[in-house]
Amino acid sequence: MTHLASYLKVAGINARKSDDSIAILIPKRHIETWILCLAGETVDEATDYKRTRGEQELASKIGSAAETLFAWTRPKARVPRACVPSLQVALPELARLE
Image (cartoon, rainbow, N blue to C red; front, side, top):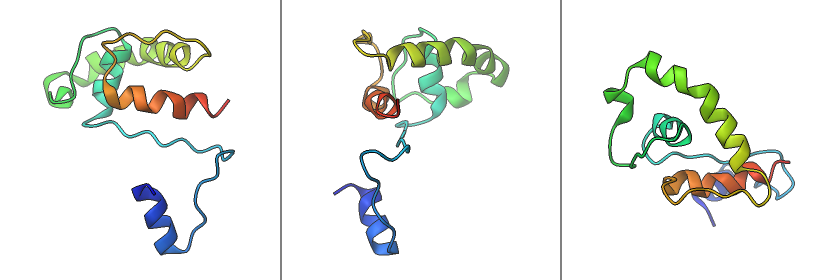
């Protein structure tokens, strides 16, 4: 049982069903890591990119990151090995929402 499922049970809330339109997306550190990864940069999940990159630089990459995220959730998409592990876990969650 996941942490979420445990908390929902304690709270008396029904667990998420497989056909619910809810995705669980949890970056290991910050969403900025995912943005940079999706924008084609080589990143790791230990570095704090939120503090080392400017807001404008990150904001300028969101469009291309969103396009890549969409492409990576398509059937038979080829996700590069350089994709950070937490994003690799999130991709099937997003693909499930179709």
